[in-house]
Amino acid sequence: MFCWNGTTSGVCVPPAAEWISDEREGLTICDATSAIFGVKMAPWHKLDVVTFSWQKVLGGEGAHGILILSPRAVERLESWSPEFRPIPKIFRLTSGSPPKLIEGIFRGETINTPSMLCVEDYLDALEWVEDLGGIDAAIAKTAANYEIVEDFVKRTPWAHFLCENPKHRSKTSVCLTLDAPAEAVKRMQVSDRPCVRGPCVPARSCYAVVCVTNVCLHVAAL
Ligand SMILES: Cc1ncc(COP(=O)(O)O)c(C=O)c1O
Image (tube, rainbow, N blue to C red; front, side):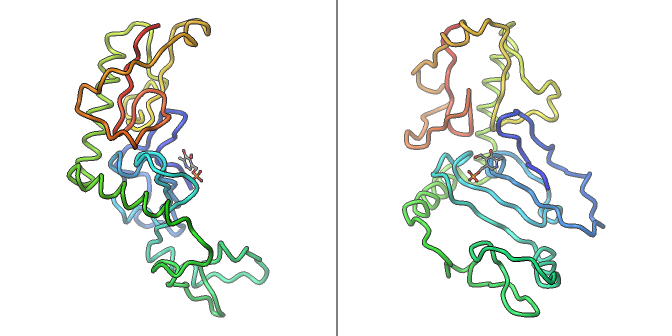
């Protein structure tokens, strides 16, 4: 069980994920919330369960998420039935004995009342990715934005990446350390100059420190 991208630590798993064995018996469970749509992830057969929400890279609403199950994960759900394991109804993915996957959950037969505004927001975010040119274009946009920060760090003696190893550095949640007293950091401002790489979509802002997929904030002054 692991995060593909550590949102507040500025680290990310490199894409090949060769450390995940193709002969594994267990399941890999990956939280991809701040990675998916922003960085290349492992070949899908390496990941058995993937979860993500759209409030990070897609800049959308919080509190909702997506669960992707591989055939191996479904097989495990349907073959593992411990004698006593009460699970709240909202988390139940199987029913009956022997357990069978409740497939309706994955076809919109909801078991509670999700916010349709949030669902619409997710659809809007997906359309935005499509308009960009699809997932590869979104990943390229993230990389291009990251390079702006990287250039900034290269020519700024007082700014450094928190993650020293470029192989493990996150491109979606860039974390910097600054050689500056706390008072100076508090005085730092974010400029409102337009992004040098093209217009941002105003509704898709993000609270990340410097830069995410679609938003570039320019550090104006120390
Ligand atoms: C990597 C990662 N996973 C999960 C979450 C939590 O997501 P949610 O609030 O949708 O449960 C966060 C932060 O929001 C995160 O950064």
